[in-house]
Figure 1 (cartoon, one colour):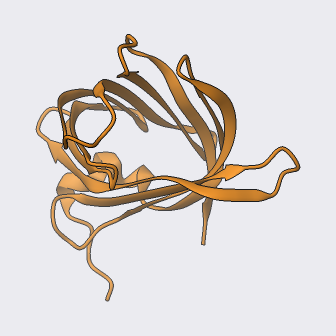
Figure 2 (figure 1 turned 90 degrees about the vertical axis):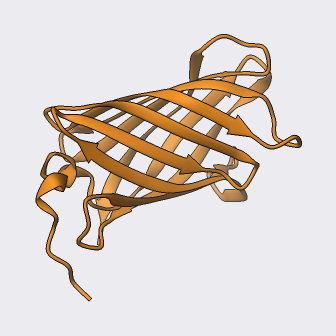
Length: 161
């Protein structure tokens, strides 16, 4: 079923669709790696985007390896170019981000990070999403495992389908 785009979603419309590509990851507590990723932004006619992301390791020979992270959530536009994002991870972490959207670019910072007893210690995050030509680029800085906020992941994805 096709729904009409809610007018509040107009500033986030550039995100709609399915995006695929590759990125790089690293952190002081882990070895650097390459990953493949698929992100989707959809809507159901209400004033929020439905978000899902999954990634997998890219082996040194270029083949796809084991599954890596997954996350799902909702992107909610607010007045005056603000946006709220809720993300849930199957590893026991839930994040609430707040930020702003302007000129096909979204900047987000964590407002809340909650975790289960068995989840790794993540205390803060910062994300940037934006168009690079027709591609979607994004970067994620993370504070975790006693480390300060610093670069963790980035990728460049192409719209598919």
